[in-house]
Amino acid sequence: MAAYDPENIFAKILMGEIPSHKLYEDDDTFAFLDIMPRTEGHALVITKEPAADLFGITPEGLGKLMAVVQALAPKIKKAVGADGVLIQQFNGAAAGQTVFHLHVHIVPIKEGVPVKPHAGDMADPDDLKATAEKIRAVLAA
Ligand code: 5GP
Image (tube, rainbow, N blue to C red; front, side, top):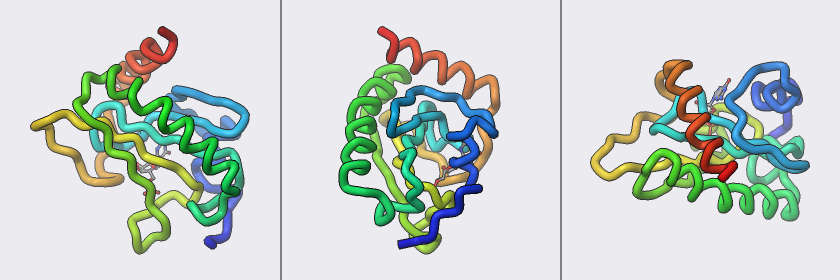
């Protein structure tokens, strides 16, 4: 199990020290848009437990995290008009993990639209804002 650094970037987002396009929050989880989206609507669901990866969270916490992924993914898919949803989760740098605070990627997929590389280019801030508003409208409906 990897050590947890309480100063990691997602911990700072959770504490409100770094801004994010928040989509959802409850007592155990927080969801926001990925700043380097692979597709429109690429979101991250993070636990509030101090877990660096999948192996650092309690089974109960993992259940709560995945329940939020399950609930949010179809709404994000609908908001951006996607055809499918890729759910991804990386453990360890060797596996592609770049932020060591457990999170699950929700990546809406549109048929025929290429998926950008993982942790690639930063999105235009106006595009992220517009996407967050679209998703929040579906979540509020
Ligand atoms: P990982 O590689 O750890 O599975 O994914 C980390 C994700 O966090 C990447 O997709 C990356 O684009 C995203 N990311 C990194 N830094 C930030 C940030 O400061 N804000 C947001 N919203 N996303 C970030």
